[in-house]
Image (cartoon, rainbow, N blue to C red; front, side, top):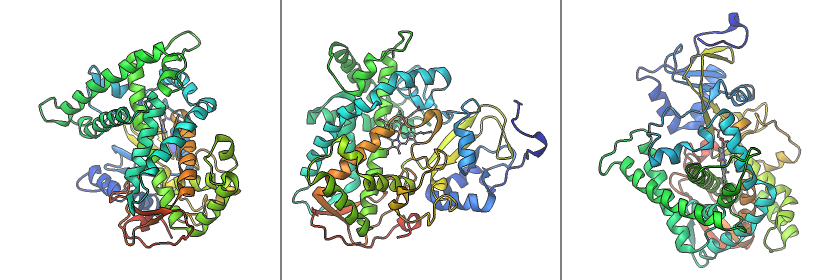
Length: 468
Ligand code: HEM
């Protein structure tokens, strides 16, 4: 057993939590079905450290609250990256693509790769992406003219996918955007099953994932060759290709392919879901939407946003913060214990999956008054530490794209809200899942902005998340 931090006598071995004759998996199913209600119940019933399954040798432990978030996220030697569920062989094209991924790297290797990738996300570089974001938002929203209803989540996914492909690879042509998007989407869909059961037989998700990974690998490699020859490209891949560490080291082709793939996967659906909920929450709060439109009018007067103008839009910033507080697209994170260790007064065995919960932290009444209400104005005076408010996580693995995503959300919202009025379809079923995907979609009426804001009632499990 490894060395345990803290006062040994006070450390308890038996961790409280619900027991089920079906083991931890049944409780995990309950969690996935109803993430917020279930994890709040765990916290309120058992306290800030909760074991699912056996109390002394649990496979899953939930840890709640800022103090434990800090302990988990600032001690990567004890709480490391969790890839225990991923069974893909590393020496395949798919394995190389999947494991060359910042989230699964640790220690010096992780720090070096982050250093090499950081320039692609510097403020100056993000400025260059702003114009792409503006143009693509217009391109997608032009197509809504004359349509009475859109499925907003689908449209936001299309938009963030276009923005990701353009800013990552420099592709703009519609056919190229579609092709790349289709390949990556096909791979991520097959991966859901392929990571747990890599069975290489015809017709299996793993075989399909391998086939798409080969095509994608080939396609990204040919782009890397082109980027090496270009000197004026401003996309993320070009920046990664040119990156050199102080000792002259650089990213290999396998690493470049892996990072390009994971940047796309990590970035586009999260941002699409965040945008979908921001628009939905505003449509349900006409007074806040009206104030926001006034702010946009004053600063932009119908024109497109620039980085300088975005900086003055304080209510827009608060709306995004509040929406990410209530409905965070990454509402839970996981680490695996590298050795037996102490957490919140309990002994956690080596190899345990430890979950930290943005979702519960963001709704602690001690930190947020009326925690279930959408109140963007709270952010005009309120400051929270990185462990009290963490939609982009905290510590070494904090989202490398947080600035990119925040700017993208600001640009897209500033344009769409000035152009259109969105209102929910009457009695539509609106239900977020754990990743904040609205599982029945987000049907919305969209008309040219006329400021006739009105709250439309909806059904669904959203009422368990938001107190309207
Ligand atoms: C609203 C949008 C987004 C949200 C809510 C989000 C959230 C997160 C969170 C919570 C983590 C850390 C997970 C952990 O600690 O286990 C993370 C990591 C990461 N994100 Fe994001 N993300 C967003 C957008 C983006 C974008 C746009 C990109 C890239 C363009 C991106 C790329 C990454 C990468 C590469 C990591 C791994 C960082 C590391 O391990 O060092 N994300 N993101």
